Length: 314
Length: 276
Image (cartoon, rainbow over all chains, first blue to last red):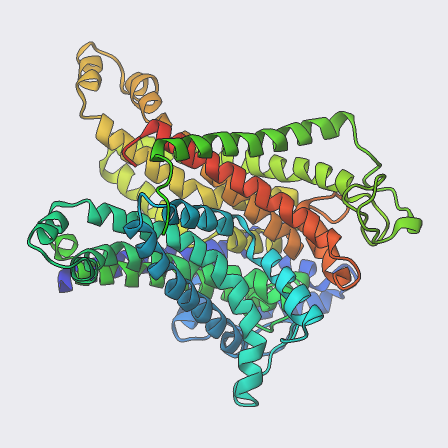
């Protein structure tokens, strides 16, 4: 098992390294002088020279990359031009919004999708199955940000139950914190639940059609036992993948949802960084997003190995 | 008590019919919009600002009094344009890379698959953020971002198809007859691996439409002066309390399109591989 984890870890590390090259090279691809692009046409040559030095543009690219990567490994992603603060501190602040949003949405999606997917698979041949499949197909086609707009219209504007946007920190008022995140979590999680329901159903159907399930049934194990003890445990490998995928999807999807609900999270920070051409901030953010996606993939693979010995020894 | 449902085959046929219908209507609407539109999609008419649906404006009007039906029709063009080019790009590049990697094996396979792994770390929105920072955000950056983010899935599918085909007798026969590798791969192996790739193209179109709408909504896609569904939603956001139609109409158009392409993709998969 340790060998398997180590191998996967090295692959993930290589992916993160290559991703960092992609993120870093983006600044190199900026047409013209990045300092001039950031400061605009009215900047004095002195101001440009100062910013150039600050961005490290006076150093050869390879050396600059090594410095940047070294800093990133120590948690130092440079300083934001617009905010005049360390990028890593800005990101840490914004994670307090984006992490609960993504985790809440992924949890909601799992709590809905796993039971519904299992139910649909068990009810194959009845009307329930096609109904659930149709509902999940429709749900997967609804863009989360549009659903968010509809929720605002109905729950915030018409019924006035929940706030239409904005964020209250947890320390300030836990109740208001939960209320400010409820609609965004629902908007983000429901679509994901639809996608996951179909995947769970397919995984369950595949397991239910296998010989050991038939054997268990033939031995007289009750349906409940067959489902919980035999089928679900075997379908877990696929379900864990789905969970990892959905965490990635909601993490990326939160970029748009934060814009809809005016939540001060990582996504909004990135959009602002584009508007102000804050390259160090944007590079830091994209690197964090990409590394998180790679890390989630790694965790999924490791849990695979834990759940299914055939994978780690295969 | 739940009645027994229709046979799976009938349901599959329903997928095919419904998917083809949705996609067909969409393509027709986009084509018709080139020759006929009920109104000029950019013409402002302050007499009908945020008007409800009526005979002259069947879907209502937006905050500038622009006809929503005309705008949603022109928006179909923008969305399909970005979607088709992005997926076309991903299809060609991804299939070629995957097929070469699978056929050649060894170091090439290793390098291509590592690159594919890295591309997985950059979903369309992330790629678009990066491209938008470097170049001005617009249709081209959105298209390229969606395209790059879609390459890995095609590469994986093509590689898997080629891997399973290259050991087959007809490939060995081709080689034994003295055919060159390029000819074997492109004339004999790849055409046989096309099925799953075409299925994926339909499914990817659904994802691309969602991504294009999200990018335009964020201001990273189609420029604001060109009607696109994402742009329309972005503009509607500020006026939702006054009229829901400017937000409802483009949203429903997106649902229609995504549903159409994903149903069609599912139906094609069933046709190709009835076991799935």
